[in-house]
Image 1 (cartoon, rainbow, N blue to C red):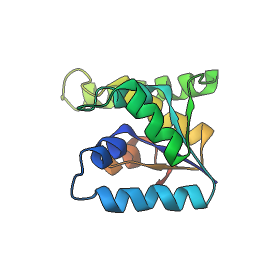
Image 2 (image 1 turned 135 degrees about the vertical axis):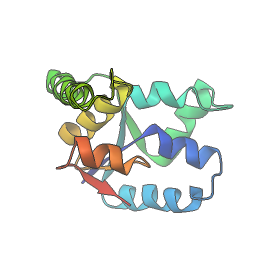
Image 3 (image 1 turned 30 degrees about the horizontal axis):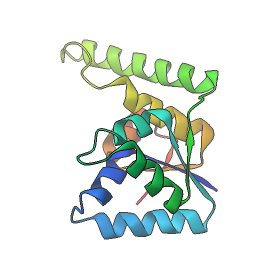
Image 4 (image 1 turned 120 degrees about the vertical axis):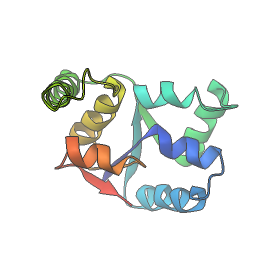
Length: 138
């Protein structure tokens, strides 16, 4: 079993938010059940976390046993673009205006869908709506 992780999970752990202990346990469970990975977009977003240097991020990921998929295959990019286009169209048709969500979220979802078996994220609604077949952990 391969588990993908969203950047909001990492920042919650690093920021010692109220759910940090639970999220740390989810990562440990995922590691016991297989492998854990993030895509390059998550790595880049993680660097923006308060006090998170590149060295800190790399050391945390290595200690946690999290690999980084910097090279995403074409299918991930196409899947992300297709789902982002569907979202953008829904937003325009609903009268909500131009899309506001970042393409990065769709890359995270497409990476999890194609390169992993499940995703740990704090944005359940986002992925339930735009990636309904993706298994969400927690």
